[in-house]
Image (cartoon, rainbow, N blue to C red; front, side, top):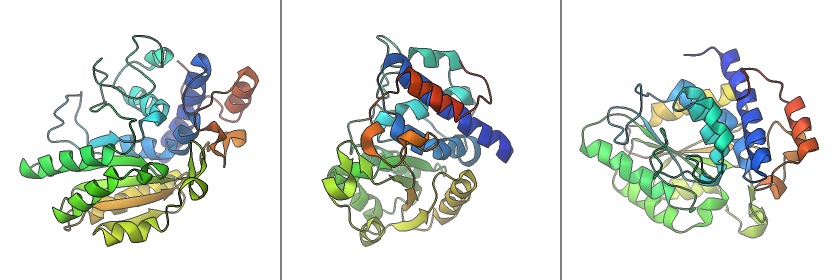
Length: 281
């Protein structure tokens, strides 16, 4: 496994990738991507048990499903820098006929991506189905998923959450990116979420929290704890507190950068705050 400093360097580089990708096409979602950078770096480089190469079946390895697919920039960056496809392909983000569309798709066969996502509220159902399939196939690997907090306003989530507990799908670890922001404002203003921990517990889940989802060590420790809770009869929910736009000061703590690209001057400021570590594409 990489040393902590290597992972910290990767976090910084992924931030650079994110802002450069959305700047180039003046389109995309930097805020949530920046807020989940530590999570993705930890998940793919420290937490998941992955095979060499990629196949759609995903047998005998851990799986990940991104439900809030609009944060594709961080997903693509981490996949590329993990070796799923060439890093310089990040240059094609959101271009016509690119494999790297604004929301992940499968028809172009991008390694690492198993579902089209971004139609919010559907990822929980897919993750539960994949986890149940692993149990039916005698595959003891885990399924991970990521969901936006505002996304949980979609009712389909709660049907899947109820189903998972009712069927003892205890090989699923679903993380909620709890940043309190969504496209139109703060979640508390758009539609208050209440106490997510109590909601998941009431639906029969094991629930834990990561209080600083932008601290790499805390994310790694938290996800390792979640792994230890799996296999005990209940699906596991990780409520991870993050800051939207983390690492770029003018993007932090606001929904304004949910789906907005930086201009030339703003890009330069963002890159200056995140000095190159592993080389740009």
